Image (tube, rainbow, N blue to C red; front, side):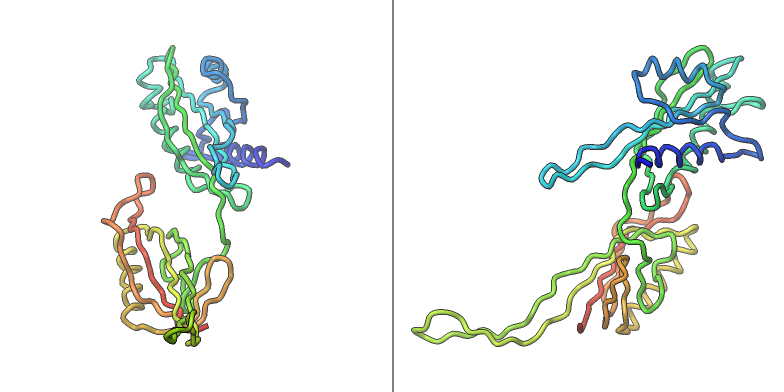
Length: 278
């Protein structure tokens, strides 16, 4: 099966499964071919509403220097309608699921959805694209970012940053120490190898937790590790083991924030470890 079909099928399956108060959110959810705006609005208006079209839209521009392809993207076109007036189609009523509810429920279901085992669906933007005869249409655009590394990074056997946080593990430079000297009248430099020195390893990303209290606990545990200064093993997302590591620095990057969709407490961060021996 092609990658695009796998993505489309997963998104359609997810949309079909959304329920509100025990009833399906959408009357229609299916894959559709991307075409000009007028034709799309006409087609979705003939569906059983509320409806969603899932449309693969190709790839973003890639890295031309190394000929690396861009991220796959898709659009989700949503339509809601009220026979009474356009306001009900937008905000909803007792017998009409409004676009505001429709849009929010779809974003909640699709944001961070794992597709094709290692691709993460991420919202680019959402916006109204048209209305007529009591029908309101919005478009969501998403990108699919392939995840690298399938293991949770650990230090001293613990995830340290919680299960919801996002982290990138980056290895610093491995350097050797030398004693260099030279003699007058003799060209060149003589070196005496003194052995490899400590290597920095960075965890960079965003701490995420369900509440400020939960995030406070994560930050306190990290600060305790800095104070303890215990040397132990670290495992990175690629299942590599780095021995004799110690947590040196915990840096918060900017203020604490809150996720616009989930309400989670967020804190950008950097942890700097030192690998003392190899």
